[in-house]
Image (spheres, rainbow, N blue to C red):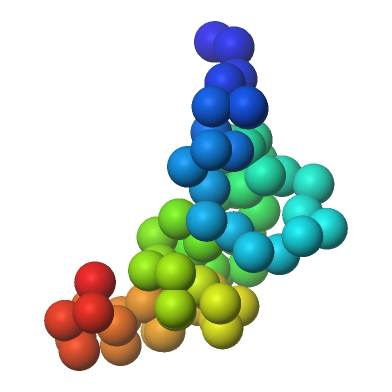
Length: 67
């Protein structure tokens, strides 16, 4: 399967600028899961801006009905 990196970048809300994985979703997901995190695309923009990608933060947002 060919990666649609340019198309993926259009939808990516990651604001971490030196990220080398932008648009390469399979690498991004694998990277964050190794760290017990979720990628930026799982978070609303205001939550993504905190750079807290932890499962715990995601769970809090779900409980608060922000996701």
